[in-house]
Image (cartoon, rainbow, N blue to C red; front, side, top):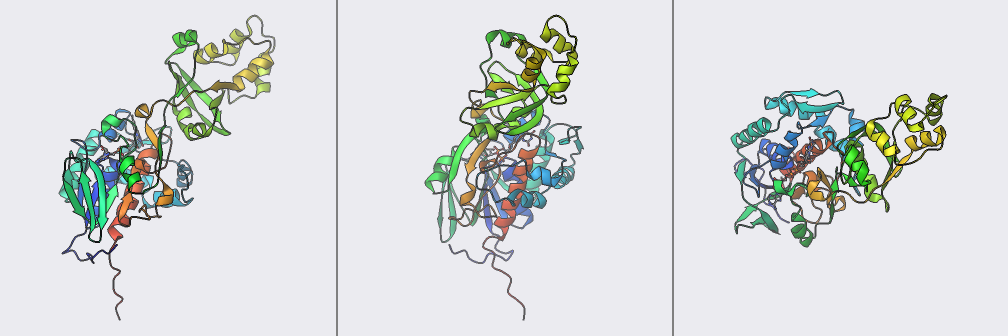
Length: 411
Ligand SMILES: Cc1cc2nc3c(=O)[nH]c(=O)nc-3n(C[C@H](O)[C@H](O)[C@H](O)COP(=O)(O)OP(=O)(O)OC[C@H]3O[C@@H](n4cnc5c(N)ncnc54)[C@H](O)[C@@H]3O)c2cc1C
């Protein structure tokens, strides 16, 4: 593709961003600061609807753990091993906090290391962000649903469902995944991107509950009750955390973190250790001289929660050793993940093998991608928004450099 030398300020290069979620807004912010002429297109009547939904849970912006650990939270088929360390160094969790601060939004670190705005709300942050983007020249085009794009020697022509088109030099797509489609991100871009030859992996529910066939009596007794301080294992991966019993199965941080492992299992199942701080031998020792109902004694001596006790009461236990083993290795067959529309996020999307290290499509120079529509996955904990901001930053920095003629060397 031939692009004319637009490197002088008199001829600002035109960037179109498709999608007004956090990834697209962040890309707009970075590209505008790099001097690009930025037009942002959003299919809904307003931007940032899923960001506002995230605000209902307090808006967990990022996490305070060390960057090396942080980078290990992300997974994705064919990702370069250095991608996340590089992207997170380029836009780090500290930079996320400084960014919020620059909008007059103070953040705090919760006891579990997660970072939230002190007001635990997204709306004030979004309002100030959008008005700053407008002041910096970003043009917003709402009710514009992208349905395709063409490329020729002059650049791109983007098509919208309302019959309009838009010509530009560079494009960043940030149309999100497919969870909570009522917020605008329904994953329908997959159809036109696949037709354009952009490799994509199917979108799958992530950070979601999984089905388990509880006996009706158990549901009646413990639906909505938490199981705390667990060690939960799937496919050799173990995580500490909590679960919540639901009518259809299980929800909660522990199962969200195991989503990618569970999706790989032909017969998904988890093993719960209800008492991870004690060994089996220690549990058995605590039962010495126990009289009467074995489980009643264990509830008291091992401090089992009502939900754990109700689950264990489904079986009969001949002795303390069998009960200790059951408490340490309780296996639960899972049926399927909850529907993608109800999930917190989606895995799958634009495949890494079709992208270069700057998130540009290898076969379509000048077309970049950012955010949840890329084929990465991460658990809740602030990793999703941090990933969206980091990829939005990276794509916009690369978009600003794309087609710029290198400065001539002085003699
Ligand atoms: C209930 C809930 C709670 C969450 N809480 C948190 C949290 O606390 N912390 C965290 O890190 N993450 C959280 N998330 C996840 C986080 O909100 C998402 O990962 C993030 O919003 C994804 O950003 P994005 O910009 O990539 O996509 P989106 O936010 O989905 O934005 C994509 C935008 O593109 C638009 N669009 C789609 N298709 C088109 C098209 N064809 N043409 C034009 N526009 C289009 C959509 O309307 C949408 O506005 C939560 C999600 C949910 C559902």
